Length: 113
Length: 115
Image: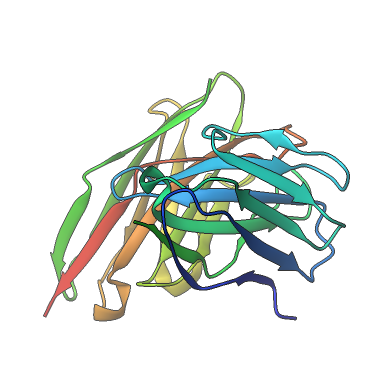
Protein backbone atom coordinates (compact mmCIF):
# COMPACT_ATOMS: atom_id res chain seq x y z
CA UNK A 1 0.00 0.00 0.00
CA UNK A 2 1.25 3.46 -0.88
CA UNK A 3 -0.92 5.04 1.86
CA UNK A 4 -1.63 8.72 1.15
CA UNK A 5 0.09 10.23 -1.88
CA UNK A 6 0.25 13.89 -2.88
CA UNK A 7 1.34 15.65 -6.06
CA UNK A 8 3.25 17.78 -6.69
CA UNK A 9 5.89 17.82 -3.93
CA UNK A 10 6.97 21.39 -4.69
CA UNK A 11 5.37 24.24 -6.62
CA UNK A 12 6.10 27.89 -7.23
CA UNK A 13 3.27 30.10 -8.45
CA UNK A 14 2.96 33.74 -9.32
CA UNK A 15 0.22 35.79 -7.69
CA UNK A 16 -3.06 35.24 -9.49
CA UNK A 17 -2.18 31.88 -11.01
CA UNK A 18 -4.30 28.82 -10.29
CA UNK A 19 -3.39 25.25 -9.51
CA UNK A 20 -4.79 22.00 -8.15
CA UNK A 21 -3.13 19.87 -5.49
CA UNK A 22 -3.88 16.20 -5.86
CA UNK A 23 -4.32 13.65 -3.08
CA UNK A 24 -5.11 9.95 -3.24
CA UNK A 25 -5.36 7.16 -0.67
CA UNK A 26 -5.45 3.42 -1.18
CA UNK A 27 -6.62 2.36 2.29
CA UNK A 28 -10.36 2.47 1.53
CA UNK A 29 -10.78 5.27 4.06
CA UNK A 30 -14.05 7.17 4.24
CA UNK A 31 -12.85 10.61 5.30
CA UNK A 32 -10.24 12.89 3.80
CA UNK A 33 -8.77 16.23 4.90
CA UNK A 34 -6.68 19.13 3.66
CA UNK A 35 -4.49 21.06 6.11
CA UNK A 36 -2.01 23.87 5.81
CA UNK A 37 1.03 24.11 8.06
CA UNK A 38 2.59 27.46 8.88
CA UNK A 39 5.42 28.09 11.37
CA UNK A 40 4.18 28.41 14.95
CA UNK A 41 0.57 27.69 14.02
CA UNK A 42 0.43 23.91 13.88
CA UNK A 43 -1.87 22.41 11.26
CA UNK A 44 -5.09 24.16 10.37
CA UNK A 45 -7.95 22.44 8.60
CA UNK A 46 -8.89 23.93 5.24
CA UNK A 47 -11.62 21.54 4.03
CA UNK A 48 -12.65 18.02 4.76
CA UNK A 49 -14.81 15.29 3.30
CA UNK A 50 -16.39 13.05 5.90
CA UNK A 51 -17.59 10.63 3.24
CA UNK A 52 -17.68 10.27 -0.52
CA UNK A 53 -19.96 12.90 -1.99
CA UNK A 54 -19.73 15.40 0.89
CA UNK A 55 -17.36 18.28 1.59
CA UNK A 56 -17.31 20.86 4.37
CA UNK A 57 -15.33 23.93 5.32
CA UNK A 58 -12.73 23.79 8.01
CA UNK A 59 -11.05 26.57 9.94
CA UNK A 60 -9.40 28.41 7.01
CA UNK A 61 -11.35 27.76 3.77
CA UNK A 62 -11.12 31.20 2.12
CA UNK A 63 -9.34 31.14 -1.23
CA UNK A 64 -9.68 27.38 -1.68
CA UNK A 65 -12.06 24.90 -3.23
CA UNK A 66 -12.13 21.12 -3.03
CA UNK A 67 -13.48 18.17 -4.97
CA UNK A 68 -14.03 14.67 -3.65
CA UNK A 69 -13.67 12.98 -7.01
CA UNK A 70 -14.33 9.47 -5.69
CA UNK A 71 -13.59 7.56 -2.50
CA UNK A 72 -9.83 7.56 -3.23
CA UNK A 73 -9.20 11.12 -4.41
CA UNK A 74 -9.61 14.55 -2.84
CA UNK A 75 -8.21 17.58 -4.63
CA UNK A 76 -7.57 21.13 -3.41
CA UNK A 77 -7.77 24.05 -5.85
CA UNK A 78 -6.38 27.55 -5.54
CA UNK A 79 -8.26 29.68 -8.07
CA UNK A 80 -6.15 32.83 -7.73
CA UNK A 81 -3.06 32.28 -5.63
CA UNK A 82 -1.95 34.92 -3.12
CA UNK A 83 1.35 35.23 -1.21
CA UNK A 84 -0.59 34.47 2.01
CA UNK A 85 -1.17 30.97 0.63
CA UNK A 86 2.53 30.19 0.74
CA UNK A 87 2.57 27.17 3.03
CA UNK A 88 3.04 23.44 3.27
CA UNK A 89 -0.15 21.55 2.45
CA UNK A 90 -0.95 18.14 3.87
CA UNK A 91 -3.64 15.72 2.89
CA UNK A 92 -4.85 13.10 5.37
CA UNK A 93 -7.34 10.25 5.42
CA UNK A 94 -9.26 8.44 8.13
CA UNK A 95 -11.18 5.19 8.20
CA UNK A 96 -13.95 6.74 10.35
CA UNK A 97 -14.24 9.19 13.24
CA UNK A 98 -13.57 8.03 16.77
CA UNK A 99 -10.79 5.67 17.82
CA UNK A 100 -9.01 5.67 14.48
CA UNK A 101 -6.13 7.97 13.60
CA UNK A 102 -5.58 10.07 10.52
CA UNK A 103 -2.88 9.08 8.04
CA UNK A 104 -0.92 11.88 6.43
CA UNK A 105 0.66 12.34 3.03
CA UNK A 106 4.20 13.69 2.56
CA UNK A 107 3.05 17.25 1.86
CA UNK A 108 3.26 19.85 -0.93
CA UNK A 109 5.46 22.87 -0.39
CA UNK A 110 3.87 25.82 -2.19
CA UNK A 111 5.46 29.23 -2.69
CA UNK A 112 3.47 32.12 -4.15
CA UNK A 113 5.55 35.06 -5.33
CA UNK B 1 -15.22 24.26 21.50
CA UNK B 2 -12.13 22.11 21.67
CA UNK B 3 -8.60 23.47 21.81
CA UNK B 4 -5.06 22.28 22.45
CA UNK B 5 -2.16 24.14 24.01
CA UNK B 6 1.40 22.90 23.83
CA UNK B 7 3.61 24.61 26.39
CA UNK B 8 6.98 25.49 24.90
CA UNK B 9 7.54 25.86 21.18
CA UNK B 10 11.13 24.62 21.58
CA UNK B 11 12.50 22.07 24.03
CA UNK B 12 16.18 21.17 24.22
CA UNK B 13 17.53 18.12 26.05
CA UNK B 14 20.80 16.26 26.18
CA UNK B 15 21.09 12.80 24.72
CA UNK B 16 20.06 10.30 27.42
CA UNK B 17 18.00 12.83 29.37
CA UNK B 18 14.28 12.70 30.07
CA UNK B 19 12.00 14.11 27.40
CA UNK B 20 8.83 15.88 28.58
CA UNK B 21 6.57 17.62 26.08
CA UNK B 22 3.49 19.26 27.55
CA UNK B 23 -0.02 19.25 26.14
CA UNK B 24 -3.19 20.62 27.72
CA UNK B 25 -6.58 20.34 26.10
CA UNK B 26 -9.97 21.91 26.46
CA UNK B 27 -13.04 19.87 25.64
CA UNK B 28 -16.62 19.86 26.89
CA UNK B 29 -17.03 16.21 25.96
CA UNK B 30 -14.78 13.19 26.49
CA UNK B 31 -11.83 13.67 24.16
CA UNK B 32 -9.69 11.38 22.11
CA UNK B 33 -6.08 12.58 22.12
CA UNK B 34 -3.18 11.98 19.77
CA UNK B 35 0.52 12.71 19.57
CA UNK B 36 2.07 12.94 16.11
CA UNK B 37 5.74 13.37 15.16
CA UNK B 38 7.05 15.16 12.08
CA UNK B 39 10.61 14.63 10.92
CA UNK B 40 12.14 17.29 8.66
CA UNK B 41 10.48 17.54 5.26
CA UNK B 42 8.10 14.66 5.99
CA UNK B 43 4.44 14.17 6.81
CA UNK B 44 3.05 13.44 10.26
CA UNK B 45 3.34 10.01 11.83
CA UNK B 46 1.26 8.76 14.76
CA UNK B 47 3.22 8.23 17.98
CA UNK B 48 0.35 7.20 20.23
CA UNK B 49 -3.32 7.80 20.99
CA UNK B 50 -5.72 7.85 23.91
CA UNK B 51 -9.22 6.60 23.17
CA UNK B 52 -10.70 6.17 26.68
CA UNK B 53 -9.13 2.83 27.53
CA UNK B 54 -5.97 2.83 29.71
CA UNK B 55 -4.93 6.29 30.85
CA UNK B 56 -1.22 5.47 30.40
CA UNK B 57 -0.61 4.96 26.72
CA UNK B 58 2.55 3.50 25.22
CA UNK B 59 3.58 4.39 21.71
CA UNK B 60 6.36 3.82 19.24
CA UNK B 61 10.04 4.60 19.76
CA UNK B 62 9.77 4.37 23.57
CA UNK B 63 7.36 7.27 24.01
CA UNK B 64 4.40 7.23 26.37
CA UNK B 65 1.74 9.67 27.54
CA UNK B 66 -0.64 9.81 30.47
CA UNK B 67 -4.19 11.12 30.23
CA UNK B 68 -5.07 13.13 33.35
CA UNK B 69 -8.66 14.28 33.27
CA UNK B 70 -8.37 16.37 36.43
CA UNK B 71 -5.48 18.35 34.92
CA UNK B 72 -6.83 18.24 31.32
CA UNK B 73 -3.36 17.15 30.29
CA UNK B 74 -1.80 14.57 27.99
CA UNK B 75 1.95 15.09 28.37
CA UNK B 76 4.40 13.07 26.26
CA UNK B 77 7.47 11.52 27.89
CA UNK B 78 10.45 9.38 27.04
CA UNK B 79 12.93 8.28 29.72
CA UNK B 80 16.07 8.67 27.60
CA UNK B 81 16.38 10.92 24.57
CA UNK B 82 18.11 9.73 21.43
CA UNK B 83 19.53 11.91 18.68
CA UNK B 84 16.98 10.45 16.29
CA UNK B 85 14.15 11.90 18.43
CA UNK B 86 14.91 15.40 17.14
CA UNK B 87 11.71 16.41 15.35
CA UNK B 88 8.54 18.45 15.72
CA UNK B 89 5.78 17.01 17.88
CA UNK B 90 2.09 17.80 17.68
CA UNK B 91 -0.67 17.10 20.16
CA UNK B 92 -4.21 16.86 18.75
CA UNK B 93 -7.73 16.34 20.07
CA UNK B 94 -10.95 15.12 18.55
CA UNK B 95 -14.50 14.65 19.78
CA UNK B 96 -14.82 11.06 20.94
CA UNK B 97 -18.17 10.48 19.29
CA UNK B 98 -17.57 12.64 16.25
CA UNK B 99 -18.33 11.09 12.89
CA UNK B 100 -16.26 13.69 11.05
CA UNK B 101 -12.94 12.80 12.68
CA UNK B 102 -11.80 16.42 12.62
CA UNK B 103 -8.62 17.05 14.59
CA UNK B 104 -7.66 20.22 16.44
CA UNK B 105 -3.87 20.56 16.62
CA UNK B 106 -1.61 22.33 19.05
CA UNK B 107 1.03 24.72 17.79
CA UNK B 108 3.76 22.12 17.87
CA UNK B 109 6.94 21.67 19.91
CA UNK B 110 10.34 21.32 18.30
CA UNK B 111 12.56 18.90 20.21
CA UNK B 112 16.30 19.44 19.95
CA UNK B 113 18.60 16.70 21.25
CA UNK B 114 22.15 17.74 22.06
CA UNK B 115 25.02 15.25 22.02
